[in-house]
Image (tube, rainbow, N blue to C red; front, side, top):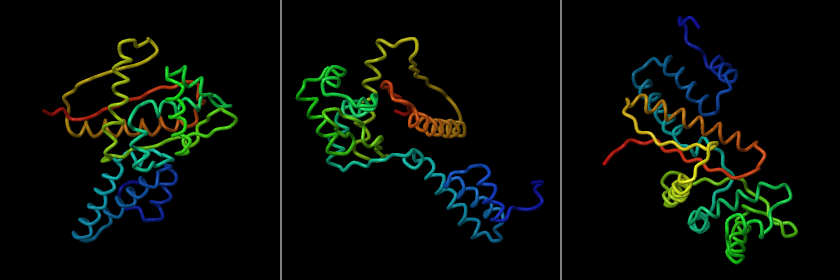
Amino acid sequence: MSGLRDFNQEQTYTLSVYLAHTDLEMDYFSLLVQLQRAGTVDLKKHLERKLESLITEALQLSKRISHEKKLSDQQRAVFYSSWIYSAVHLFTSIKEKGITLEEISLRFNLSKQKTVDIIQFLLSTGLCTEDSGRYSMGVQSTFVERGSPYLLKHHSNWRVKAIQKSEDISENELMYSGQFSLSKKDFEALRERLAKFLQEANLIVKESNAEDLACLNIDWFWLEK
């Protein structure tokens, strides 16, 4: 640790296990050690390219946040057409014995036919299950990755809901919009903190007892024309 010698691969692996690195972090740490020990310029360049590739992979939230269900394109077209499908899917998790059609209809002010249509779709995708007229969450989470044609619709659905909610925000809720001027280095550092927060938040939510529904929107981008 004094810096006089480099770690070998066995020491690198043992330290990664001790530090509870993820597989991606373990690979990155191992490459850092290999880069430090590399004896030729060509090998150093090769390892640097692999490190850059891992950084790019780490920045993809789809690699960092676990999700159980990948819908087909046809199913995505329906599920992301409106916030209501995701909201009803979440709502079916808040009672141990499930939710009735009437409870869904009352909560979201839906007609009986619309409620039935939504539930039938959620049942067909495995996102919900049915037992004696009560509906429960099946698959817990879905994910729409960067580059998907449904990503814009997914984001806009929930940001519209946030704008509507902002007119009647309560003291125990939180909304914030901030604009900053900062360095590219600090921008990347804050992005990494936000990504880690989302990882931690998803773990907390996964273990949390479902009592009600909430929405989290986070945006972090460079301001352009």
